[in-house]
Image (cartoon, helix red, strand yellow):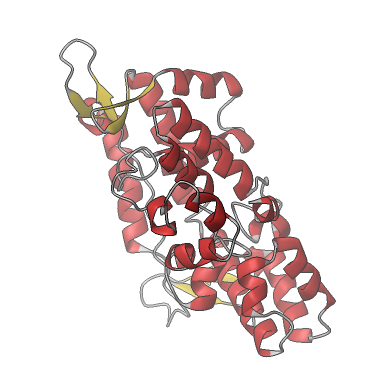
Length: 305
């Protein structure tokens, strides 16, 4: 778990592009707090604490590096087996599979989009806070109106629901799904593949090291290609341009993951659940706009040669 102090939630942009930092350990503790305080049992609390333990160096860059979507999820059980956590949970007569975050019984920890879950609630609020899109008083307000009832996360306030749900829409378009972010991730994967080819970075480094340890190895490389690509990643606007229809052949066409959340709102009188999009036309329109933008993707031509 201590290794996650050295894995930033946002990956390379936190080091090369001045993005505010927060570690995956910070995030894991946020998620644990939510599961603990909203009724999760010990088993789900352990799953919450360890749900990101298998995240590699530079977070989701590994997806591109290994060519496997959500790579960390595919190695999660194996990774747990490499740690002393295996010994600890055996004292409860549990195996690694019993604390996997995708356990269907862990409904506080994970839910499919567009629903909320502890994981999504935590990283959206924390990102919103460090990006100064919300203040601490907003966090307290959002959490005070949050509930877990009937097997689902919900709000008892439309205002709180909208304040929260606006965050992932902005991030999907302007942060996680922005062309700068996508290009930096693409370049980072090329840098790491090059370093791997030169035997400067190993698969073991990717799985078990920290961002700084690998950054130090990359910065120490005397390979001009790696040096040049790092310089490009630091100023992503110089590394690409977006193609319009008929402009040419793109080098890649990334389609950002749409992370929009359409929260349930519980009516305290009728005790019925309704989606925020059913109650707020403005939110519904913005939700659909960002969703279509992500589905369309971008035609990107790289200027890194």
